[in-house]
Length: 282
Length: 262
Image 1 (cartoon, rainbow over the protein chains, first blue to last red):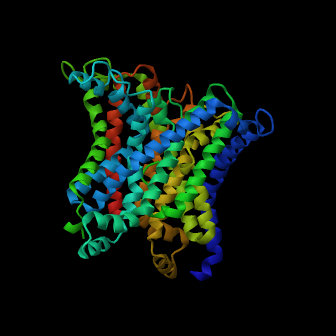
Image 2: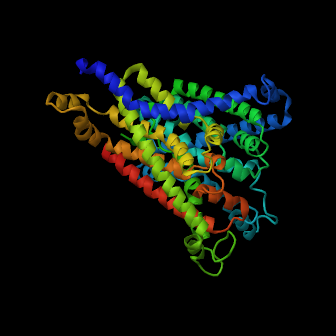
Image 3: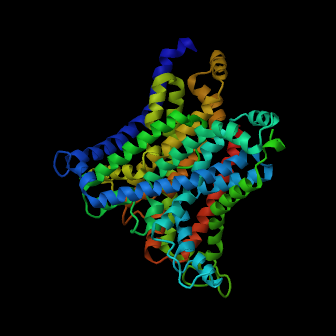
């Protein structure tokens, strides 16, 4: 193999070249060009970035985005943890059912899943009908086109992503360590808190970061279940470009999205080697 | 391994099961809704009806959306799978820091939020006059699918014993023969797995299509999007059921591939 190494290198580069050239021409250059507009459109300078401090509309969008990210993460990660824990330590039957629960939604499009929530949550939707039929409420509850609807849809979308890194990390934990703690007289709860939980911490960090990254730039679900009243950053960017168009503002927010995503990914890489995670769904 | 000492308590099991139900039950609820005999989203009142499935079958807009999406997704998958597989093979040969750098660049389309890509490609296609064309959408979707192929094929290659190829080389097999008869058969499950992900990426893609397609190209996600924003007709529920069934089928196919690869 050693004697092949020079020609191997050329062959390797030649094989990678088509993909790299396509990436350069149809991804890196066009995206870079647009991000640069944040400094040049409508005129050179940092005016677009100043809007972060002066525009109350943009601040409201960012606040809503951060709030929904945090709420979604706070709900999806514990639920993902419970699912992963039972998948790793529970009975075979439970394991099959829960794995199906994690994997199937990953393969169903965000659009179809958001639509399903519309049928359930809308004014004349199934949940309001059931509640009214049961005599629990007189008027339909406002379950959709507000923050509640967006959070329900986002949590539904994100639980599988929260569970995946937790399953990966928990499968790597040597369960004999927990058994040893039990054997030495620790209660079940104590063995969990003192042994299993600390060992699963990288999984918790990875899971929370993954959910934050994905939620921060998400378009479909907030756009459908927020109904224009709850606006997150991706939808706001879309409006800036397709409706107004204000390229400079849209590009500035895109830079912000990229910066936050890259920063969170950097953190994620510290806790978690992505090579351990099976790619499941975009 | 899972000794009784570690068995999760009833509370934890109940929470996990509740989460799984929360994930799965809504996907099942659309089935009865798609069979409603009413003209709005509701459960069947007098009896079940296949009218909304029939509407899909006869409505030229839905048929065209299915056809366009299938065509775009197939060609984009071909593009993503060939370029992504070659790239993974190239990285595998290169090894070391260079290949790590290439991989880090190549996964960008999968990790940067697609709305950012939508802005970039929209502006480029305005300049190149590729807005609202098959070529434009196929290239964009191909780019978005490539990272998944690279990841799955690289994973398949990481378990590959290089000595097999060296042995074949020692026996006089040239690079093409080695690729065809030694490498490809072993990484085939990884390629197919990546192709499935690339297909689903294009098949479900909404935000980029909202930017770069308008009248001539109306993919299925775009058609559903318009339907949700317009009149919420129960035929969307029928489409959702078909999409969920397709996803379940692809999930099973993928699981079988992974089992074979393992």
